[in-house]
Image (cartoon, rainbow, N blue to C red; front, side, top):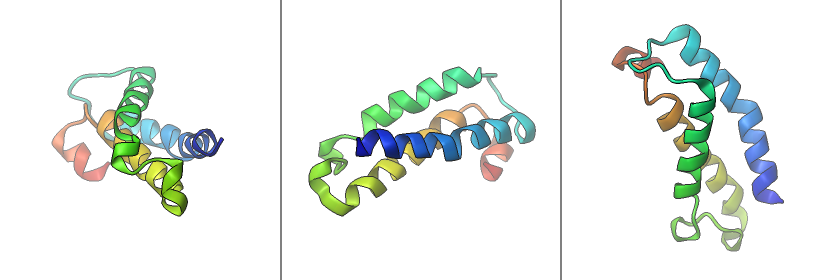
Amino acid sequence: AVLVDTLQKCFDKFMDPALEFRRRECKELVPTPPLQSVLGTCNMFDALATPERACSPAEGESYVPMIEMNFLFALIWSVGATIDEEGRKRF
């Protein structure tokens, strides 16, 4: 339940603003549909947020921050992957 609740909060807080910023403020070298960026974020999060990388309920108080950090890393490298250099500086 902690994982689902934390991810829901992260998606609600960061995904739409990131996609909107990319759409309005950045030039994409390879245009990417928003849904593809969401899927890319999910896939990258799944690959990153593993017990081997200290993202486990067994980690205690650091579990939620690790979920959040892995989510943000995945979001930046999936939503921001297709924008040009100038847009990356601003993103």
